[in-house]
Length: 400
Image (cartoon, rainbow, N blue to C red; front, side, top):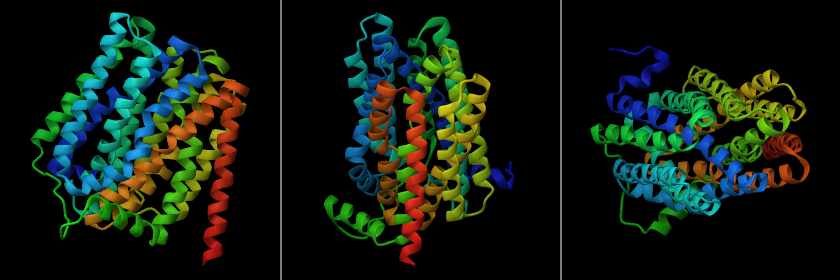
């Protein structure tokens, strides 16, 4: 079977296996994200503590992403991913057992959020760079776009299913299903015959490899520009798990089902954005990435003025659509620019910024929401993002 041009990366058998496994696992991941946020609100009724859990979950990414990227270039990526996926499954099932036993406490959720963060710190750069090992270079952009589409299709299905489950039987089943979903991606990895071996040309220390990757990024203007845009958009917009449950409950007066559908609206927009990105050619233009980032920030700011549930769904759809074009556009550009031997380290900088900026953003947005309300947090996030993108564009033109 031959897939059409828009799905051409699926013609590679190893990528197809990995893609299917990831698609199933990501549904479980989004179910857990919604369930964990709702559990924290049930346990604490605190916007600040909800932001704190987000910070704990992503702090290890901030601390260890660059080291993890060097390890991803040094170790067989398939073996790394088998280990991280097993740890992620164990984390989800442990949280399920605590909830089902009735003994779960806030500190349990915080500790397991740290475990999740450590696993993701190693998993994310290895997984990002492994995709390029599964397809030919001409299909890397399509493969990344399909992965983004799967990630965000899961953002539609996972929160909607989790919302229904939580409303009817509680949060524990969402954690169980997430734990079991990792078995599918583990099976896909075992069936994949690409190891993702290191492409190092000589013996070096891990610190030398880290310095090499940082120096390459620092001295490549296009990579510096892309990472700067990614930093602004990530800090400003990608705080859904902190702000959307507060928007649902405190502003729109919705329960778990409404929260799930709001998250699904973001996911639906992101799927549309990812598929749009996949049709833009081998590498999206920088002005498309910046324009998408600006649209995402403007829509995010607009949420501050929304009081109607249907309108909130529409605006969050736009946020998801534009934000994923910006973030995945940065991803694909870095994948194509980076040499094979440095891809893990370059993608670790993507992970560091995209995932590692979340603790800062989550902490700040949680604190702003606690003090002035969630609508103010949406306004501050969107306005800060627009200002940051304007500064980047002015600075870029000044250097020419």
